[in-house]
Length: 114
Length: 152
Image 1: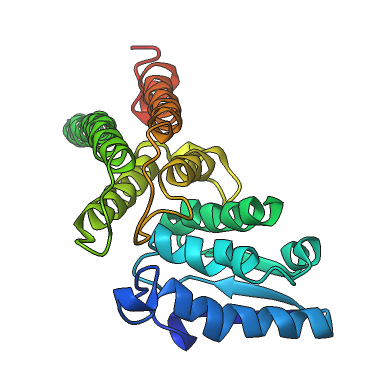
Image 2 (image 1 turned 135 degrees about the horizontal axis):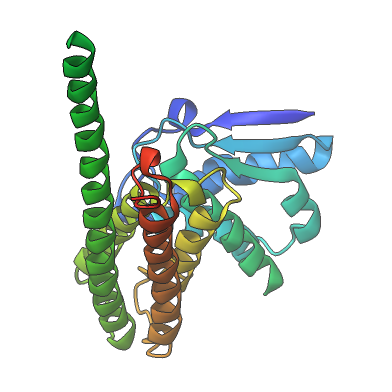
């Protein structure tokens, strides 16, 4: 079973910077308001979660690093392997975003190893 | 006679279409190499300096812009390397992004890391080399009906 979170529809199509101090729709805000609650819910229910970025105007790398890399860096209680299994990031209809998707996945793995 | 006129018309159109495509590909690869050189310079300077995002986020913004442009150009240059999220093109660009943007990128009070320039140069060189090879393959290995020069 999978839950899909459509970022453009439910968060914003115009993604912001890394920190809340950089303005609206930051990676920090996304992590705290969206990613973390959904990850905790996924851990309880066992349902995997897909973050779908199709429809966003762009994906700044600092936003992604903070939202997904910061997940393990700042919330050390999370079981890394289980979360990596449950969280999927995708933008299947937008080829331009594929490197950003890979970057976000790598950011999670790098911070999980530390 | 009519057939000959129609045939020559379509042949000319066909030739023009692929000539434009070849030129477009060559220019896109050249533009990508220029963008990679600029990205390498500004990101190396960024990591070698003590620039603080609190003073001005302009350096981070410029690096993000260059990364976005490199992504677009890489997609234009290497369609065959871009089949899905797991293919080689997105992987190479993602590696470049990972070499430039770390957890310290954009942080207030960031410490310089001059050694990062080597990782950025390595990732940029690999991307440029693969896309240049991809252009060569397109120009010299593709059959003439796909715009290549084989059998010419």
